[in-house]
Length: 591
Image (cartoon, rainbow, N blue to C red):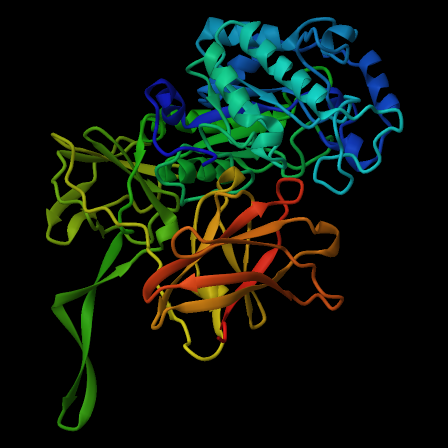
């Protein structure tokens, strides 16, 4: 498992923080075209390296960066100590490609860490394991983040490079006093290649309370990127987003997401039980752009009023509020059908679920109105205790309520919200409230019957999925026309399995219908049957017309009764490429 469920005591600070400020800064900021400019524009390494002579963020002020994070209500800062270009914002003894060898001469990471420590702001160091500068890094042309045409004078030596990167991580963990986390960004290789478990143990040895993300394939929390998951219950996770829709590093003349849009994302994450990490990209002189700073401050103003509904809270799954409508009956009065309202009988119709969310802490429950309700009287199902007070946090206005068998009914909401941003209603109870929470929907189990005479197909649509990949991803069912396929494979821990019933014991030839692009061959499929049986077969390439091919894996024995046939990756090409699977096919072996 990449990330274990639950929250360790020493990491509870991270779970409760809910909001952090991300900072992407480096040589690429000079060019103003995003942090991937070297890669996307094919800038030769030697040419890109000349930016060191021009890099001088003379207006950088660690206190100002920390001050903005405080104004925004962020509880931690994550900063790029080294991005994919290999340039270090810290004074590493293991390379000359670093900030102290620029006209700036100072250790920016050291200054920022000290400012955070002085002001009680937690600090997390982003570190990219992929490196476009180091001559020992092993590039696989065609693999994500690897250079398609590395310099001819490179000296690929993977053990030497891993020693280098692990040495730099140890520097970050030992040179700057107490730090609060390491944020890796090398998800497209295996845990064995990154020595993820070893580096995880090394970080914990020096900084036991520091969080480690999942992108070294071994960590404390998942990191979905520019997406907002709502199904990572029981795991720590953090969704990251940039104020700029197009880049993380500085990009001139770019648009910014609006504060209401980003604030809504923060609320969604809190209501799902995760953190939100929002990125700014400083200008070449070290200042955070004013348009981005303004967005951060708007979020901070909202959090000053509503922060109790975000920080230190747990998610609550309640059914969405419902509005009460009089029942209508159609009656036949002397042969004429008439419509009649039954004034003392009511139907309850749910308001849009996406407009609401819930969090709680102790004796407080919070209803997040991401969109102001369409009606001033509605019922929140599942609340079984009567609160002592209900009020709008933004205005302090108390809301009338009553509790009955249907839940908590609110009435007399203001006709308009007290502001343009999302509103929160706080319910105060004399003790922790009794709640009927809703369970996550469970896919109905399908039992596939094995044919005694002919072939049996186990289609993708009847499989059950378990396990999480990097960034908290799950296997998904992809539909193209009439075809259903399993996609989204990242790690061996992800599994698709079929529940089968075999009426008569016997041996069956098992084949897989699937495929991958011809340039992506190299993955191996593992099929596990009842008991300890295991088969392996190479993922076949797609045919010339893009169709799937059949790969025979071998013979599997099935006993009478129910059993499970499971599929997962035994090997992924470059650690992250697998392919798609449409179905398994079982054919009885004739005696």
